[in-house]
Structure formats: C-alpha cells, structure tokens
Length: 153
Image (cartoon, rainbow, N blue to C red; front, top):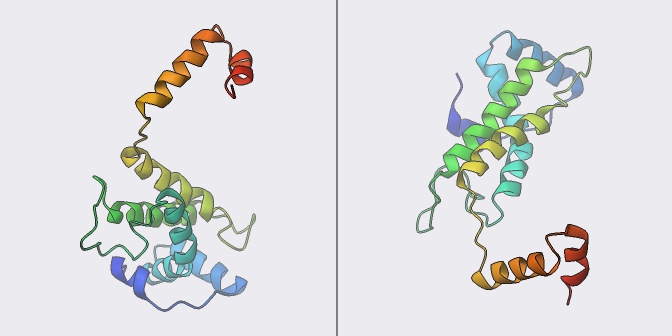
C-alpha cells in the first residue's frame, strides 16, 4: 500500500532498465507496490526538483517538518506531495514504445512543484531599486534598449 513516509525513508537501490519497465507496466495497471517502488527510485529526482524551488533549504531535511524554523504559508508537505503527483502523472502517460524508462519524470515533477512554489514565492524589491528602475525607465523614454544602455551608469 502507498505510504507517504515510506517514499522518503525507504532504502532504494537503482533500478535496471528491465526492472523499471516491468514496474511501470504494473504501476499503470494500478499496482500500489509498483508505484511505491518507482516513487522511491525517483526520490533523488524529486528532491533535486524540490531543492531547486526551495533555495533556502527549508525542506531539505524531509517532509516531516522543521522544528524551530520559519515555515512559509505552504508547507514542505505540499512540495513533497506535488513531487509525488508529478511522478504519478508521468507514470500515467508513460509509453513503453517511446522509452523503457520514465524519461518524462523530471518534466512532470518540475511542473507540479512549480505550481506549488508559485503559490508561496514572494519577491521583495527595495524602494531604492524601484526608484532606480523607474528613473532609468523615464530617462530612456520607456525604451528597453536605451534603458539597458544607460542602466550601468
């Protein structure tokens, strides 16, 4: 049975191409154990994608929580759940005729994690930077090329 915590804690050995193909066949047929084994095998990819959207490492220790740390409005569990959804979506569209492996996994995981990151990412721009930007924009007549030329000044 699919167990959220087991995905992030289970020991994983790399899958051979033949093993992965067989697991993908079973997973597409709805075999929960096959899905779990694939999720565990794709854990490094999922963690890499999560890290790319979490540059401060808030969730680098795992999905079980971060005692004593500031946690954004969308918690780490959301990133981990999104990564899992990405792998499952890739499993659903997998076509053995195209690839014996789950070659589209990164694309699907990235799409799902990016959706969650988009809900939590904020960008702070200082007042001085905004003043400089608008000053350059006015001086250049709102012409991008001219603005790029005068910006270094």
